[in-house]
Structure formats: C-alpha cells, structure tokens
Image (cartoon, rainbow, N blue to C red):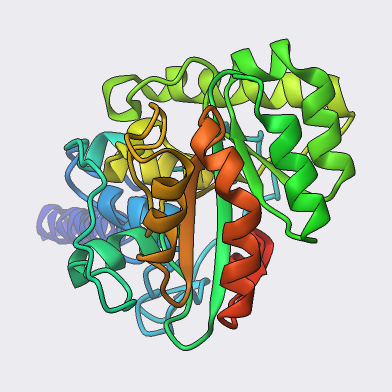
Length: 332
C-alpha cells in the first residue's frame, strides 16, 4: 500500500514537471527573443520601402504610405508602434538617384516647325518626360516672351560685339560655356556676369552625355563649375545645355539631382557655319519663326548672327515681344 502511495506521488510530480515544460516551450514559441530578418533579398518588412519605392522617392520626392497611414506618414506598421532608434547623423551622399534603373536610350532634340508663328509641335510624352526632371524647352504659349541663349564652345571674335548689342538694347541672355571657353576667355566671362547675363554649363569637353558614365558626367560639370568659380568668384551654376541636345532619362535625372535644369530650345538653325544669305538670312530665320515663349538658341561663333542681332532685337520688340531670362522661365 505504501509502495502504491509513493508511486502515485511520483507520477503526480512527473505530470506537473511535464506540464511546466510544455507551457514554457509554448511561451517561447509565441515570444521569440531574437526575430530573424527577411529570409531572402526579395522580402520586405511591412511598412518599409522596396528598392523600386526608394528609387521613386529619390526622383519624385513622394514616399510610400505607411501601413494604415497617409502618404509620407511614418511610425506605424499594422497598428503597432515601431521601435524608436537613436538618431544618427547621416553621411552626405553624392547622389540619391539610382540611375541604373533608368533608361539610357539616347534621344536627340528635334522640332516640327510651322510658318504661322505658333509654338512648335512636341509629343506630349516628351514634354511630360522633360517636365518630370525640371527640364525646359519653351515658355508659356499665352505670353509674348522670348528667352535668348548663346552656345559658346570657342571664341571666334564676335562675343564682344554681341555683348555690346545686348547692352545697347537692354536685353539679358544666357551663355552656355564649355571648360575650354572658361579657361581661354576669362575676361569675357567676367563681362557676361558683370552685365547681368547668365552663364550656364555646357560641360567641360562637350561629350554626348548618354555615352558617358555617371561619374564622368559629374566630372564634366564640376570642372566647369570650378573654373567658373575661379574666374568670377561665384558659385551656383544651375542651367545646363546638354551638348548636341542629346539626353536620356538617366542623364536628366542625374543632372537634376546635381542641381541643374536642362535647357533645350524651341528655335534654332544652322548658324555655326557661314549662311549663304549672310546676315539677312540669319535675321529672317529668327523673324520667320518667332512664337510666344520662344527659347532661342544662337551660336556666338556666327558673324551673320552678330551682324543681324541689333535688328533682330529691335524688330522683335516692335512686334510686342519681351525678352526674359531663364530665371523668369523657371520661376514662372
């Protein structure tokens, strides 16, 4: 009898111990002390942006919405508070744009002209693509404004006269210069700035931008920026004319991230070589294509442009047009 009693006590103790062990195991399963991360690189925790969402944020500034919250709201995932971590000062990044996911298909610049002084035709998809990255090719169709720009790859002896003419007519222009021009013509650069003109970046060596890497693009722009600062003591170049008008989505996104507006044009013609009709042809080429918001590209190496410029400026004003600068265009 005593033996049976002792056996019953032993069994009872064993049952209690087993019950305790099972309960502890169940609790451990429900409350793991070390939660593993995603099991593969394709997994994303709820409430955290994926690679594609991060790219979208970098380019458009629109972040994904947190679970259960509004766009850009942070701090909740499935209604549970996110653990707060000590703030860490982020290191400045050279660029937040992930250009490897963007198209680098090279696009050339072209326009469909008309003879009715209307703005040239442009596919809506191209206009939208440019606008997305802060690029401009034309102004408002509702205002008789003109934006005069010159490309300066090298000096052909005409820029001083061009500057004289602009000053006499109280017109401000933008001059897009290469690294060679900055180094070889520092006094003309100073004069442009002193007389209120904008000096824009036309790259150091005039390459087709889709054909070079991100780092090479940065170097092309920075060399011009550095030379401009050395010559003028000023910083903050913000307008870029891509050489030959060649661009891609990648180059637009990268240069926007570097602080630039790409500036194309709505009026240009073959003026970097002598024209068969001389200054009269240069004059007529401009006057025949005037339109509201025209962004005019002329090359300062042209004698024909130089000799016709005074008449162009006076006659366009007589037709009611007003010359504005790129700051007016971008700020409008």
